[in-house]
Length: 215
Image (tube, rainbow, N blue to C red; front, top):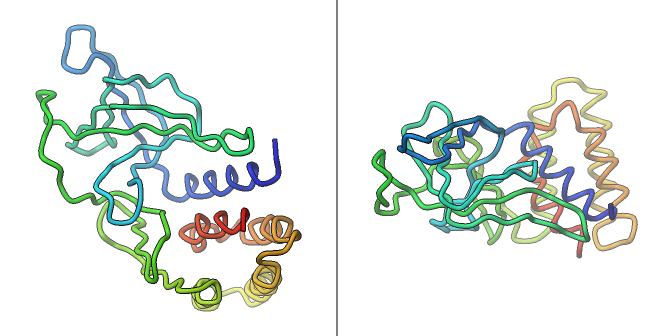
């Protein structure tokens, strides 16, 4: 397992820990041979302003084209149209399914406004949804400096324990100073390790940080 691939995998696992939901997988939907089981995953979109919904999973699952996915407790159904193993540097990152929305009878519906979790960070003020409702955080990253300023503000405002806050801010400063340098990966791993007890605060920033691994 490569270090960069491992870091991307750790980033996805951190997001799963905070944002993961129970996904019901329906096989042979609405037939006499129907069968259902539950797995952990995330409902997401392909990118900024995209209406293309995807589901992502931490394991390589035997979900097939034609299966139907449903967030447990939801009345929405999504038919799988394609599947893909996301691999980077020969390291498995996550399993991904592309879907289309269907109604209870299995018929396609018109695309509707996505209210899922979006973790893709692009543009000057990327919008990151962190729940099934539109409770989002606008992350300003016109440049790298702004992203680290946003992170620093979250840590300062949300972590009450002074010693923990000081240590995490110190690791954040080291991480920022290593951007574009060969030691960035090591500093990234140190920062994630130090922040483990507060991963919910920084989860929305992890996709951006992992993008910097290849910078």
